[in-house]
Length: 375
Figure: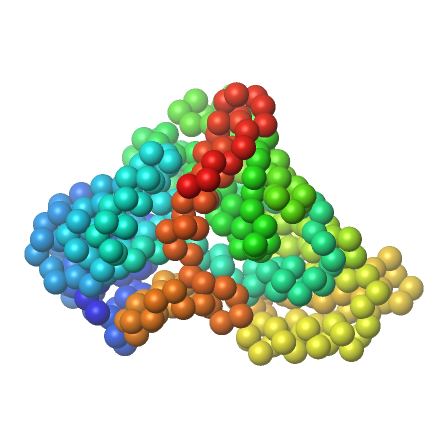
């Protein structure tokens, strides 16, 4: 399977290495508006370099294109790849930064008959899979509330892309760059429940060229509410902090995905009234998926039964996501599920995520609750 990459910056350069390691894929060309960057990656990976992605689409016999340009610049490469007859397109999240652009991309892909997938690598994290498993198997009863915080260091909008950081951050926001991850995870955790309305606020006191943060309450059609917050003005040691908690009728989840200072990475699942036998049974099922944890029993404690998972025992490798997509496509399997964890995120997931993020932005602008539009 011949693969090309459009955009070989922070993520595209990593994707090039993943492609080169796959048995059934060949990286035939890379494109980047910075000719020197494209040439450097091409030399390292043994493929051809292009400074114009349209020349890549014209010149190479591509089966698959990966779009790894910055957030505001996904539209044209996706549309042009579809019009060029590329059968499979994989793009970074979000598909677009406006519903209007997303609709144009959707129309182009559907008209061409191309398959489009969105890279949401968190779905492949072992502990995110534990979270989804817990809700799918009713371990803590009906979920009633959640709190999710995903913050970046202030160095991300100011420095991550070098001299282009301010320009590219201004074309995005924490809603697009960070909450796109969160929205997809929440939809995946709680399927088939959907987010139906949003109330949000934003702040513009520090950066000036893009909102400092978005803070929102999401309401699902099941009655569940989840508060989500994403910030770009944190002065923190780490590049990112990502923590999630959920309360259910019979228990709760604390998930320190990328924890704050001096916190330990991992997940604890507290289950009211569960026997050691029941907890062990769930642990064995997750073990069959390569996810490792331990049962914790304290009959005299505030939470007498729990399962704990440590990140160091369940490491996340973001390259696993792209490798899985490529294997699926190379083997000509369409809409194949991640075993036990649902289908690969595709066009419908991308459109729904965009509408939720757009509702967050509209709500912050209008200062009121707004419904989530149906794509």
